[in-house]
Length: 244
Image (cartoon, rainbow, N blue to C red; front, side, top):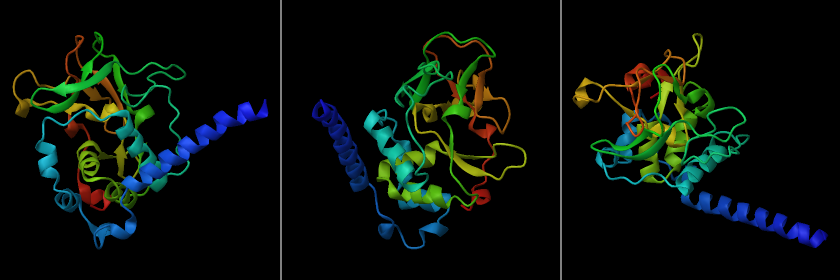
């Protein structure tokens, strides 16, 4: 009986160890980072990885479960060894939108015409309804100088590093807070920005309740399969505030 019990435990342990080793093999060790990487600005990082080309590619595939798991395990290895990822909702669907319920937020990811990857309403959404709750999905990189964020990004394969420079942002989480680099390691980061510069019909339909909040509420009724658009300018950006 004990052998029968140990076999699956041993299998799971070996599988985890193999997965851990595979992740490490895909990451760049710190000894191979560029010289004085700690001093790189946001634009320096983008230039180092040639991210302009990656950002302009509107045919990038949606991240797979393996892709999200690589990013998550890299975060645990480099940034916070205590961070666990035990949400029953997979990152390819988002996160548990309600505490204790394995129900994703009311959107799904797919290609967005002219904008690459995006998020779309999985059902009709009423004006004023909570559409995205970053208070659940957001992760905050420690420190106000973005060193851990830089180490995380420089450790990643080029495409993932460039994606993170597009997906991640800086934010204060409360009035007396310092600015930090903030991210989410699930499809919620695929939400595109709207605005007049994107043409008619591309105005934001969700916005955060204030500059400190990660909660995004519907500005009007949103119909099923309509793209969900926020406004990236809702969070002020000055990379020098986080040492970049």
